[in-house]
Image 1: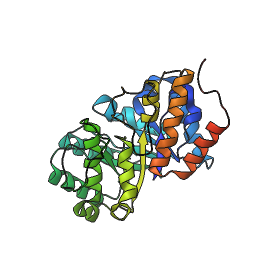
Image 2: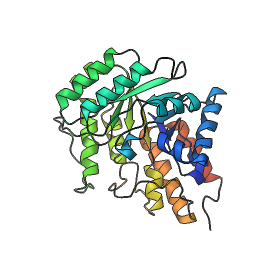
Image 3: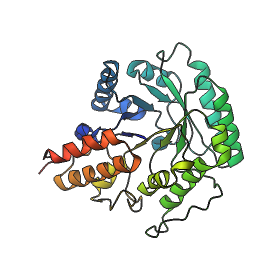
Length: 296
């Protein structure tokens, strides 16, 4: 699986995944972040092999960017892929905004830009029906699956012995069970992107039950290694990142030395867990180089 990370402004040397990621509201709010994002897409057009996904910002804002404001940004940034507007937990509004975006996208987004459509909603059968609609629309290239699915899929996956009662473990199992299910795999033929991370344990399930993993599972994005590091949390292993109890990443963060060391440690475990081999090599090389990561 390919990894996409979105590091703090002051630590862009940590953007080492096989894909890159940008949030629309930060592009709008921060000239520094916008400059970084434009540099990434310009590098892509010069054959850099880390294509950029432009996220509409729904997870951070509740409702993602849409309309002329979003189309203008897409035209300027020229990402490899853009996430169509969605609304957290709301299937009907997500369907409406996604297909409205698709209908309005003609001549408003750069030729060749992929479009990811996100599955939202709490009724599993209705979410599968939405997936069928996405699959039937040739304008959609990728299916996005949130980290916090609102519905259950019957499963015999047991939580690990080191898990706690925190919801992050249940969310990990819930998304893995959905991916492993026969009706999902019979329906979903487009590439799959996992939006956000719950625990590293989730990725260990994809290795343990490799025969159940969809062949079209492409990528994941996260800020978790940095958000945890900011809170001086160093993950234990490629299976155990502990409870997801750290606050959202503050992108203006300028890491102190201890925070930076823990962030890079977490980043290495994350790349290892998802199986992004080239990203892991880059992160290990950075660690081995003796780079001074943070302010003293």
